[in-house]
Length: 306
Ligand code: T5A
Image 1: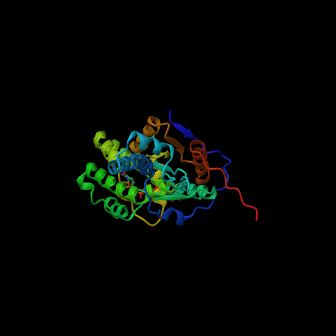
Image 2: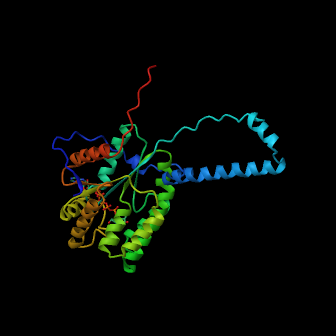
Image 3: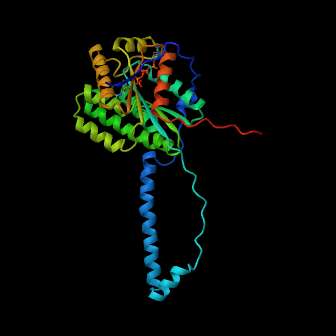
């Protein structure tokens, strides 16, 4: 069974969302996954440097048993003391998934506001998009221009957009210790192009391996709602026409819901199924419960007395 969170009926009022934070670009630094990698890489590199320095000095002045003993007893130069590097708190990566109109964008804003109120540096982003290059690809894909090429071509376009998004936005934010909340991510490719588009799962997995690598979500919140309700919500929203995927038939959207539910069942350690049929405040509360239970929130900062 998937882990399913029911919103309480007496959910408190939400914190006010900030659209600004949802669009906030992340600073350019190295990746979260990259930081672990960088650390692993840095160690062999410094070991190599030390080895080559030893080899060099050994070449310049070959050691005898006598000089070796002296050198060991009395180091010629005192090693310079360096200030300890300030540890970077680990960033966390949360993704929101689900069918059309399930309330992902609404809940992303609310979750960001909650995280920021808890003193967390939180960045909101979305897919397809979230970086300059990926936003260009978003327009291309959602316009339906690539539809005639089929789901395989669309899967590779989503993967290319994701690679840019990860490099430009997600990894730099995680590396500085920020929490990243992303509206859709690789699970959408698994479900839309994989489960629904019948793209070979080995290809979907290979694309994910190459683009996402170690930058996997710590927590995925799957907003679950009957397809009819989601489509009705999306249609009631004023100001835009149905896009490439919204314009698919009801059977497609019902199958989407089932595929997302199956995903939640298959990866219960990462995914939490959220009942999104409640009003937005209650869904927000259920999401906050899941986030605070699954991820360790930092202790609230103490105020200094003046
Ligand atoms: N895609 C994406 C792929 O096929 N493969 C991929 O790899 C990726 C990354 C993206 C499309 O691309 C596809 C999937 C998508 O079809 P999109 O425009 O980003 O396109 O579309 P969605 O992600 O589906 O976003 P939507 O905006 O359509 O839906 P949301 O974000 O789930 O819903 P939201 O928050 O905008 O809410 C919709 C309406 O409902 C109201 C809101 O006010 C809004 O009017 N609402 C509620 N009403 C009642 N009760 C609640 N609890 C409500 N919550 C929100």
